[in-house]
Length: 305
Length: 259
Image (cartoon, rainbow over all chains, first blue to last red; front, side, top):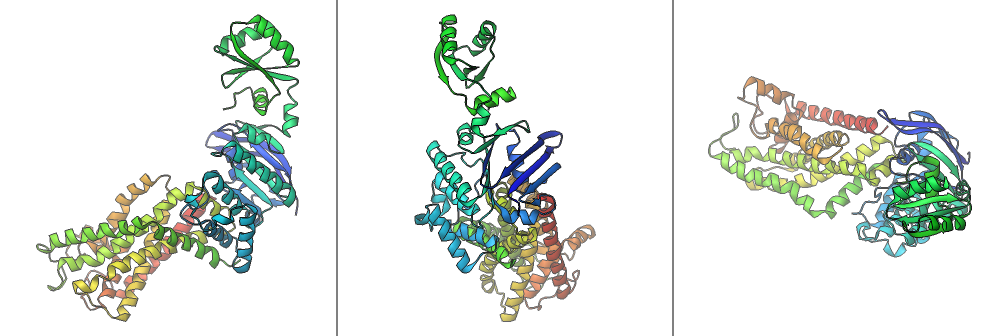
């Protein structure tokens, strides 16, 4: 069995609207790849294609040596999928949800009990085994969902927006767990996300915008595309100040969350100059390292929202 | 991999869910029951169904129709949840598993059928109270016929539900197709004596034969058959064919909607 997913020139469209445009990438077992993009960037379409829910219109997809067009059944056995919409039946108990999943994959009896108790232990949800899913908190439910997707020891784990609705502490926990899973079990993990911090925590990030894969690399690699610092300026009139800065310093700035972001090599010098030039228009200034949001804006020219 | 396991687990989920939502149990049975008592009592004074014996009043004539209505309502309630389920992760999770599509349909159809049968049996308990007496043989055949009707109707519901984007759409189809199918099945009035055009509509309605088979089994073939209708065995045959066709239709629908 091969140990990678290879996607070449993958395209998809809904009617005349292009959802994916010539996407190509390779990812290997043991890696976590996060597709980062705003709503409508095509990440859910990509997720649905990889999880065998919709067929691609053109291009080739090979998952661990199996072709997505002709060997769907073999692929389905290798996939563990966590959907964005709740994947648990709230009227069933935790144990019953896991049992149902076991049955779908043909496990029963001793094998079933072993798998379930192992996962309950691993995900630290043993004490909630006999609770109805609807009685669990959002974070716990997400944990049960991942346990459910892992029940048949998949080689590939696909997660669509796994942290939506979870607070930052739980997100970090989840991300730590996924990293552990990828390295210890040599699983290939693909995530879609619209959250910058979730992408920052992943091994590799692919930036999607309007169906195009704009860039792919480790967060550090991606951020190295912006040399130096990012100066963040708070002002009540972003448009005017943006124009004035462009005229005066010949640098372009981008507006993110009503703040101006200016990328420059020597941040501290620029801060001094800009404060001297526009003392009345600036309410607050910060110097920071570039984030993936800055990279997204630089690469696409679009705001990340 | 044994296919029995995924089928039975999908069936089991439908049944467990049902018992954990008690309100569903009552909603499917209460409405037809009220319908039966009000309309049955109201019409019994002025309406003697054509081709039936004097002994059998309207309220008794209407009874098998009400049992079938309960089967229909339960089938609708069981399948309408598919519309919401489809958008949620649970059903999508089944769709990305290696379970063949027809097993998913079979499990769902058996689940809906079981729920319909449970409700139907609750209503069957009333039969002796209105003077219908049946022995063990007729009870078994009656249950068999109820199974066929429920299975066919659940598959019909699945055929619709798997195409629908919203439950509102399902309600529209229900009022436009499913309720008329029931109204024109001989549940409400017999086929004997209706205008020719209506008689033809009723004759091409598959549920007419299901209801006829049910009526005959209930009375152990002792009541006069509607002269316009075929023999009991032929009615059973047509109902069985209806089951197979709707199952194939539902399976085809799921294949075409998810591939």
